[in-house]
Structures are given as C-alpha cells and as structure tokens.
Image (cartoon, rainbow, N blue to C red; front, side, top):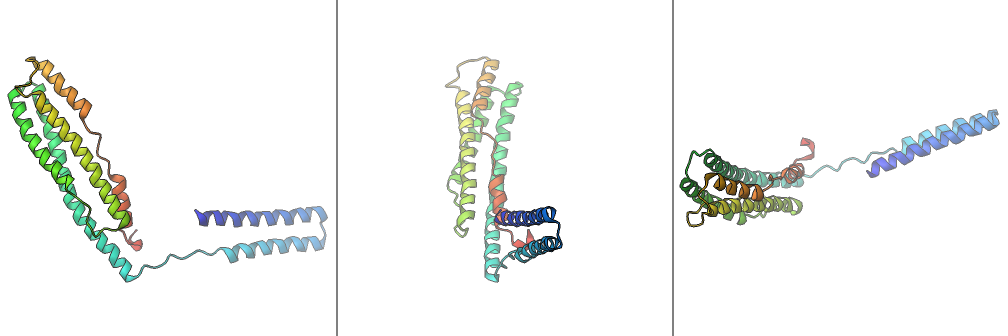
Length: 221
C-alpha cells in the first residue's frame, strides 16, 4: 500500500509539472518559454525514472527456509490426524440424523432409538474429551501456534454442541422420561431438540488458509 501511494504521488507530481510547463507555453509562446516547457518535461521524466526504485525482496537464509519447512511438516502431521477426528465428528452426526430419520419413518422403535443414541452419546463424549485435551504442537511459533489453537477451540465448541444435542435427544426418549406414547409427538420432540441445538457448520477455512500461506516458501507461492 505504501509503494502504491508513493508511486501515485510521483505520477501526480509528473503530471503537475507538465501542466505548469504547458500553461507557461500557452501564456507566452516564446522560444525561451518553449525551451523552459521542454526542460520541465525532461526534468519531470528524470525525476520519475530516478525515483522509481523497487525494493527487492530480501532473500531468505537457508536457516530461515529450514525453519519454515520444519514448521510446515509439524503442522501437516498435526492436521492429518486432526482431519481423521473431523471425519469421526461428521460420522457421528450422520448417524444421529439417520437414527432420527429411521424413527420418523417408523422403521425402528422408540426403544431402539434409545439404545442407538446411548451408544452414539458414548462415542461423541469420547471424541469430545479427546478434543478438549488437544493442544497445538509446541514447536509451532507465534501466529501459527495461535491459529492452530483457534482451530482446536472452534472444533471443541462445535463438538460440545453436537454432544449436547445427542445427550438431550437420548434423555427425551429414555423410557423413564417419555412424556407421550404418540409416535408423531415423539418425532416432534426429537426434531425440536435437533432444530434448536444443532451447531452451525464448522468454519476453519480462514485459519487453515493463513497457516498454509505462512508455511509456504516464497519461491513456491
């Protein structure tokens, strides 16, 4: 942004000098003024050419490149395992949706719904505890560490909401807590729990994008 502003300033000065020279020429129309007009253009051109210097990018040292590559490998290893857990997270939610749909279609009984939700709750709690114990790799530095921590935080919040919905749904169909024997009303209760408690989509694309940018060598961008 600073380079753009500086270049714009030089362009404005160049145009101003030409306009001043042209105004002088129009006003006086003498050989002396014509010469002055040409000199002003020449001076403006030299000014722009002499000051148009592009600051070269500072080349990274071998040590700096190795540091980026080390950070890159560390994050890739962590992110590979993270995505496996995300797949489990998605699988749990798909199972939950399938259970509710099967019950809605009257393909399974309320007792089966309870048993399956009990098993699903255990899976979800195990995954939730795993996420809450996660920390960014210690070798990640500054911004990269903070971004990775943000990814873990967002995912932990997401799985907390997901687990809560499953837990509330299980409680609602617990034989000891059933408030109605009507299949349609039971379906409505479960759908209401899902609609109100379902977490918003997990969005970590921004953090991952910045991390990839930070961990890419300049000559590979």
